[in-house]
Length: 115
Image (cartoon, rainbow, N blue to C red; front, side, top):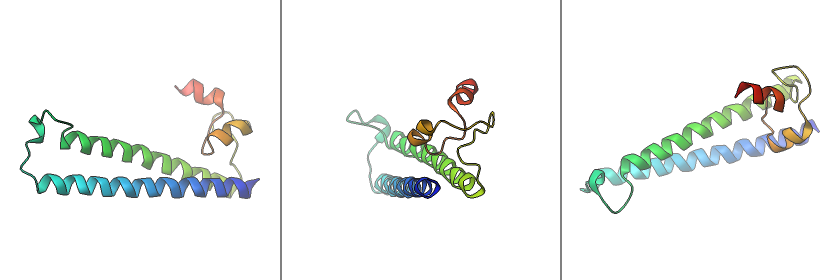
Protein backbone atom coordinates (compact mmCIF):
# COMPACT_ATOMS: atom_id res chain seq x y z
CA UNK A 1 0.00 0.00 0.00
CA UNK A 2 2.66 2.62 0.85
CA UNK A 3 4.08 2.47 -2.68
CA UNK A 4 0.65 2.99 -4.27
CA UNK A 5 -0.02 5.87 -1.85
CA UNK A 6 3.36 7.38 -2.67
CA UNK A 7 2.62 7.09 -6.40
CA UNK A 8 -0.78 8.74 -5.96
CA UNK A 9 0.72 11.58 -3.91
CA UNK A 10 3.50 12.12 -6.45
CA UNK A 11 0.93 12.18 -9.25
CA UNK A 12 -1.15 14.73 -7.32
CA UNK A 13 1.98 16.78 -6.68
CA UNK A 14 2.86 16.81 -10.38
CA UNK A 15 -0.71 17.83 -11.27
CA UNK A 16 -0.62 20.74 -8.81
CA UNK A 17 2.80 21.91 -10.04
CA UNK A 18 1.55 21.84 -13.65
CA UNK A 19 -1.50 23.86 -12.66
CA UNK A 20 0.65 26.39 -10.78
CA UNK A 21 2.92 26.74 -13.80
CA UNK A 22 -0.14 27.35 -15.98
CA UNK A 23 -1.47 30.00 -13.62
CA UNK A 24 1.91 31.72 -13.54
CA UNK A 25 1.88 31.86 -17.34
CA UNK A 26 -1.70 33.20 -17.30
CA UNK A 27 -0.69 35.87 -14.80
CA UNK A 28 2.29 36.92 -16.92
CA UNK A 29 0.06 37.13 -20.02
CA UNK A 30 -2.46 39.27 -18.16
CA UNK A 31 0.25 41.63 -16.91
CA UNK A 32 1.82 41.84 -20.37
CA UNK A 33 -1.56 42.53 -21.96
CA UNK A 34 -2.23 45.38 -19.55
CA UNK A 35 1.13 46.97 -20.37
CA UNK A 36 0.45 46.87 -24.11
CA UNK A 37 -3.08 48.20 -23.91
CA UNK A 38 -4.59 51.64 -23.58
CA UNK A 39 -7.77 50.11 -22.26
CA UNK A 40 -9.31 51.65 -19.20
CA UNK A 41 -10.05 48.30 -17.61
CA UNK A 42 -11.45 49.89 -14.46
CA UNK A 43 -14.33 51.39 -16.42
CA UNK A 44 -14.84 48.83 -19.18
CA UNK A 45 -18.51 47.75 -19.14
CA UNK A 46 -17.74 44.78 -21.38
CA UNK A 47 -16.02 42.49 -18.93
CA UNK A 48 -13.80 41.79 -15.99
CA UNK A 49 -11.07 44.17 -15.06
CA UNK A 50 -7.45 43.22 -15.31
CA UNK A 51 -7.23 43.77 -11.56
CA UNK A 52 -10.00 41.24 -11.05
CA UNK A 53 -8.21 38.72 -13.30
CA UNK A 54 -4.98 39.19 -11.35
CA UNK A 55 -6.83 38.75 -8.09
CA UNK A 56 -8.42 35.51 -9.30
CA UNK A 57 -5.11 34.06 -10.47
CA UNK A 58 -3.39 35.08 -7.23
CA UNK A 59 -6.13 33.50 -5.12
CA UNK A 60 -6.04 30.25 -7.09
CA UNK A 61 -2.26 30.16 -6.86
CA UNK A 62 -2.33 30.56 -3.08
CA UNK A 63 -4.80 27.70 -2.72
CA UNK A 64 -2.71 25.48 -4.98
CA UNK A 65 0.48 26.36 -3.08
CA UNK A 66 -1.26 25.41 0.17
CA UNK A 67 -2.41 22.12 -1.35
CA UNK A 68 1.11 21.47 -2.62
CA UNK A 69 2.43 21.98 0.92
CA UNK A 70 -0.18 19.50 2.22
CA UNK A 71 0.88 16.91 -0.37
CA UNK A 72 4.55 17.43 0.51
CA UNK A 73 3.72 17.02 4.19
CA UNK A 74 1.86 13.78 3.42
CA UNK A 75 4.90 12.50 1.49
CA UNK A 76 7.07 13.36 4.50
CA UNK A 77 4.69 11.49 6.84
CA UNK A 78 4.80 8.53 4.49
CA UNK A 79 8.61 8.56 4.55
CA UNK A 80 8.77 8.47 8.37
CA UNK A 81 5.93 5.99 8.80
CA UNK A 82 3.27 8.28 10.28
CA UNK A 83 1.09 8.54 7.18
CA UNK A 84 -2.51 7.56 7.92
CA UNK A 85 -2.26 8.43 11.62
CA UNK A 86 -4.39 11.35 12.76
CA UNK A 87 -2.29 14.26 13.99
CA UNK A 88 -5.14 15.26 16.30
CA UNK A 89 -5.94 12.10 18.22
CA UNK A 90 -3.28 9.62 17.09
CA UNK A 91 -5.82 7.11 15.80
CA UNK A 92 -5.73 5.64 12.29
CA UNK A 93 -7.44 7.73 9.61
CA UNK A 94 -10.21 5.84 7.82
CA UNK A 95 -8.82 4.41 4.56
CA UNK A 96 -11.86 5.77 2.69
CA UNK A 97 -10.94 9.29 3.84
CA UNK A 98 -7.35 8.79 2.70
CA UNK A 99 -8.58 7.51 -0.62
CA UNK A 100 -10.72 10.62 -1.08
CA UNK A 101 -8.12 13.01 0.39
CA UNK A 102 -4.69 11.39 0.25
CA UNK A 103 -3.05 14.37 1.96
CA UNK A 104 -5.44 14.29 4.95
CA UNK A 105 -3.61 14.76 8.22
CA UNK A 106 -6.60 14.31 10.52
CA UNK A 107 -9.49 11.89 10.90
CA UNK A 108 -12.95 13.21 10.13
CA UNK A 109 -13.80 13.73 13.83
CA UNK A 110 -10.70 15.85 14.50
CA UNK A 111 -11.05 17.79 11.26
CA UNK A 112 -14.71 18.53 12.12
CA UNK A 113 -13.80 19.86 15.56
CA UNK A 114 -11.25 22.24 14.04
CA UNK A 115 -13.84 23.97 11.85
